[in-house]
Picture (cartoon, one colour):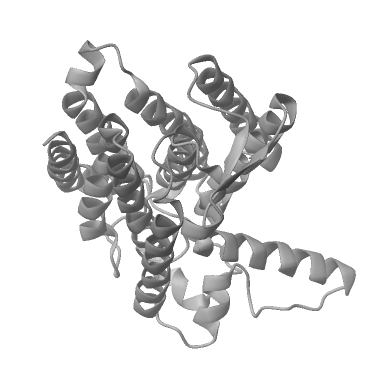
Length: 328
């Protein structure tokens, strides 16, 4: 009941916010600036409202508060902690988006500014989870059913790296209409399923709200997109994806359910390194991966459905790989 309530509230509120916020963003001329080096047909997207992540962030946050009220009254704030973690990254993204809109350029915070803010948020979240007893330094290995024992210092470094990497990988995936939304939807459903399976209903509140909020946002973000989520939305989603993984004590599941995120960031890393090592040669037509496929003739709709389908299949496989874990 709580799960469905969270999902429905997030969907309805996000849908309503979309109706109200998109015209407001247009009126404020909060349009996306498109990089000249991107696919030339993306230039037609110039001026499409950005910072649309506020739509589902608002719906999700309200749903978590309302649907999780009983848990809060009982002294359990776990769902709020995960939401707050994602919100911190959403704020970082909002600052970046705001500067881009103000400058009318596709540049906001510097890379080092983003990194330091994200690192600080990741370390603070890890310390808090450890303090609350929600973490162990034992890494559960999906499909194998065994644990890798780490010392706390090593685990803390590992956690910070995974969180920052995940957030930026999700951000990199947001380059085609609806792509980051469609890819993250099955990930949210996966977290709901795992939380319910292990008997931790309180941990299903946030991913259920995430599912509902993204489903509503897709009505506006599906090709042709009426609004982009911007870094506001993509960084929030990155925080949500890694936040849930750590609260469930399953960080090693991220590369499986986030196979598209991994492929996107690896394609970018490979392209940059190969370009530097060969003094100008490229592995891909353009990085990240979705642009390479676009230039190879893939439509935005094909990218959306293929990438979302792959993610859904990997999420199902990942669920089978962790169902033997009955406690966190």
